[in-house]
Length: 606
Image 1: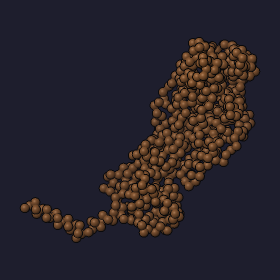
Image 2 (image 1 turned 60 degrees about the vertical axis):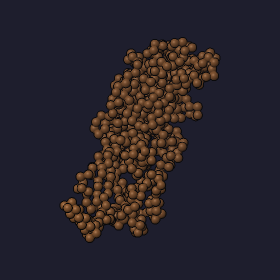
Image 3 (image 1 turned 90 degrees about the horizontal axis):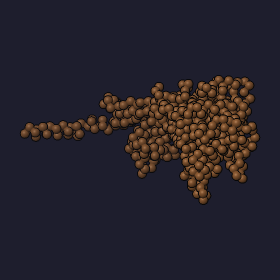
Image 4 (image 1 turned 30 degrees about the vertical axis):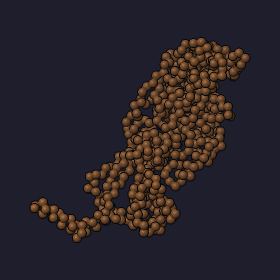
């Protein structure tokens, strides 16, 4: 009896609430529960001197939930407030509802990049337009015009981004697309917060759901301090204007990259999220001649030319097939049977120092043959494998692990490669087929970053740290793998004669245009043969000799002899970094290089 009585009471109370008293139903109709994402501030990026390179700026957007939009809304006034035409309203609202990207009950970006004054005007009237939700968040702006390839930029997430990160991003979110912005996306992006709001039928907030107990705060992204010296970076980009190529400079004792540039470049501000972005991107992407998007410092592969000779010397000494005081006569060419391979006129290289100073090809044709033939003329694959083993110790033929996406490995030709290349030869290939690699030509290819790291290894007398761009992450050390010391298998006794030869190269030899009084620069020129046009100009160096603070590689496409263009650029960069200025007596050289035009400046590139 008691059970039936209780049931009757409940039925009567339910009838009162649902039929007689409609206040609860009316309230439910008047309010909705909205889940809103709170976007975090993206981490800031600064250089080694704490100058900001990338900062945040506010961006205003409008999201729409199709099923919540009033079909009788005043579209004319709506469009007037947002400064769009009716066709844009229709196009932005009507999505491909058959696509899994969109759903009529889920908010999507209706309008982005709204001007602040337009956004403020709309906010005063937004209660008239249920279904539209204004969103405030931050995107990027770039105080500097330099280092575009390093910094990268943001873009809207794509379907492939959503598939890779289904829980991290939504349509309309921004994600790092290139450079540091992409590589360190997980650290920079931060974590979104959530806010649950009760809103009335006009979209106005009524209260926090459960007094905000279910809300979570956004967590800002980590700040990155890069190892770049932006004064040096800007100076290098000035020297490289109207040229194609790259410069990479490294602090030998740490592996920190001091400057990394690719030319032609562009202003990173071109990719700020505004109405001009699309046109600027299209113009840059259409420049097929200069390819400003190509990062020549880590993506382009080049024959290193004669800067390979110091490395070959160290390996030959270590393997006992040559020695520092060896004399190899040169009459302006190297002859094998009836073939002559060119060199240039110079005094006889009585030792490796003189050979490096004059960049004698004959000396290194013989040296590489002796190494390849270490186990006999008929077993060149054994000697080549010994050479390759050492080159891999030097970080060649593989990715160096730099903290940028899309790094190239370069290319080291293997015995299997030559077996296939010379498969028509009955007796197979021999050292004489491949001796051009002894002067950094033939099939050997390196990136400019790998070349700069070779200079760092010589500067350190046999060790290096993986080149990297991040100096600290929110005040903490960079990732541990950048702090691991890597040793090459070359005894320390073999470095002094090679370093002395590089010093002679700058003081008295082919690299004399890199000489700066008092800086003790050690370097080596290279002229990389180009079958499609003018040769490439190459130079690598470090300084000072006995207390190395900078190692650098310069590669200038189609610039000719290494001593004419690449060497003076390297000398100027070293002088700028160590002395913080260019001496008055060398200003003429700075002006000559700056004004040297090797390409016609395209309006799309910098």
